[in-house]
Image 1 (spheres, rainbow, N blue to C red):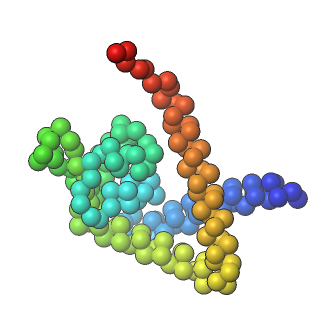
Image 2 (image 1 turned 30 degrees about the horizontal axis):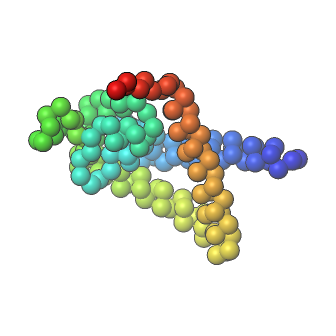
Image 3 (image 1 turned 60 degrees about the vertical axis):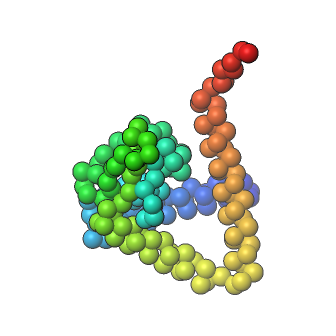
Length: 161
């Protein structure tokens, strides 16, 4: 099998397996009313200071409209709360509730255990190679996403002076 075919097969299986493992982890947690997507939104919101919706949407590479739908569900389930910015009432800030922070920490532990299980089986040299290769892959996919977002926004109109 060629390197391209092998890499394609590995990436497809890896993506599928990580998704399945993450779905199982969420289902087996004490937070059975959330999805993996919900968890990713909560990860982007984070446990520090409240963030505006635009910042969270940008981190997730989704529109604010798409994020609003997800946040609405998380607000109803009690994981996220919305508040208006005191400085600018037009700005909506989101933050995790105590319940959301517990789910966030639980999921963070899952990721830490997964990463530890992977690197514990690798030599220091293999860890460095993996880090470099995954960094390159991440950069490629990030640039691809940014390129697609730019194309979907179309040409920007310029103002004539």
